Amino acid sequence: MPNHETDRRGFLKHAGAATVAAALAGCLGDDGGSTDTETDTESGDGGDGGDGGDGDGGDGGDELGEFEVTVTQGNMPSGLDPHDHRETPTDVVMLHAYEGLITRDAAGTAQPALATDWSRVEGENAAEFQLREDVTFHNGDTFVAADAAYSINRIVDEEVGFASPQRDQLAGVNGAEAVDETTVRVTLDGLNPIVFSEFATYCDIMQQSWTEDRSKSEIGQQMNGTGPFQLDSYTQDEEVVFTRYEDYWDDPAEVSELTFRSASESSTRVNQLLQGETDVIVNVPPQEVNRINNSDAGSVSAAPSTRILYNGMRYDLEPFSSKQFRQAMNYAIDLESIVSNVLGGFGAQTGQPTLPEFVGHNDDVDPYPYDPEQAEQLVEESGHAGVEIELNTPVGRYLKDLEIAQAVAGYIDELPNVSASVNQRDFGSLVDELLTGNIEDKPPWYLIGWGEATFEGALVMTALLSTNGALTSWSNDEFDSLLETAANSTGDERVGALEEANALAHEEAPWIFLNQQFSVYGVSSRIDWEPRSDERIDAYAMSPSE
Image 1 (tube, helix red, strand yellow):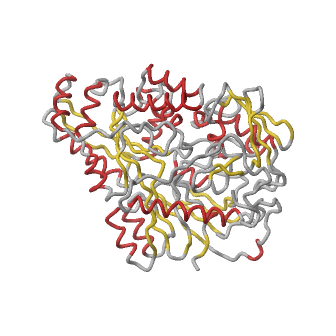
Image 2 (tube, one colour; image 1 turned 45 degrees about the vertical axis):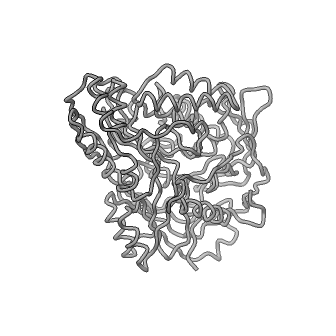
Image 3 (tube, one colour; image 1 turned 180 degrees about the vertical axis):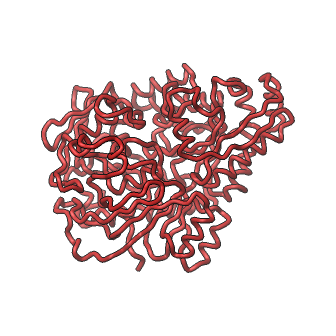
């Protein structure tokens, strides 16, 4: 925790610099993992608001000048409702206007945000949060516990608002109520060992009256949070513009105006950076790194992220209903070559749903080796020799996503008994299909990524592989039972159940396991900012270069 001598913005920048030093070492040939993080999620260390906020809001605002920043992502946000999305590009925009009860620093450690302290209620399946006083929403109204309780309930209870796609992000949370104006109590369905880890990553706080006074469409086009930036204008699918919120409960941001745009083509983003049209770009392709670093416009910064890329396969459809066929698809690809040649080393191989930094990762499970002869034999054993399959992939959402998909399909197509091709998809429409509750509406074979900033393997596997998971296209009773055991246990028993689940997923091969993504950014020479492993592009941590 920082002390009172360090403001929150300065702390974020300091922590980011420490993280990126290790991250860049990984990019240059070390083990490729992000820094190990042990997060105490059982209590809020620093109930005095030790992240620097004194609650007076706006201190020093008159001394801040104009400093405009533009960020170009691969995709625009799907809308402005903070509870109605599951995409990181949308979340990156949301975090500037909306805040949670707890947040994380660049190293992944839980820090106070709108809550100054948190603890379990002794003898009950409940937790309580003590909230900051004198925090205002952008419309000037005071934030109170009823707003926090409403926000939680809007996510976990369909009757409060709508069926939020974020329901599983607060797994084990039944609801919330305001005890008084500065205390909110959350009811749990059992032990819930990860409740504070969930709240450190998810659940943006909205104002109850503002939200209830607006239609769903209006909420998706307007914003009213407590964050350091307030919405100035929104042009759907084109541009989001924020301005500094001078009455922010902590020091106002140094950035006076923040603009988000998108460009799906990496070459377009790179050219915009080099021409001074934008200040931060995502997913710089490896072949463009030297061009940026050798320019006067900016440089490349990279960090291993908490995101995995994988090819999901629908277990209810042939040929993917066959375990032998799914395993064959893993043996068919040269993942080591994909990481080295397609990603230029900006990635790491995976062989299970969770990353080495995550709780429950199984160190005894290795990536599938490249063995095309074994793949061919397994295809024959599956009874699906001669099948034709099509890989659905987004373009421009992830680092080299199309090229990864083309490489995967190319390797599989080299098998004498399988034909494979690639279908380029709009990211938004692909996600809509994957989020549908009906497995029949999901594509049979697809490339997608998943970032989990909680470092919790249970959340990854629940969302992506459990029978009722948000993006699942697989079902296995033994796997579900292991996740249930983990949800109702602690310590070694919990970790052991998650490790077993990872091993089972490797063996059953519901995916073609691909790579851990490295976040590779182009950063203008006019700004001072370092990337984070959780892919948050936080303009509050930006300042003019000296």
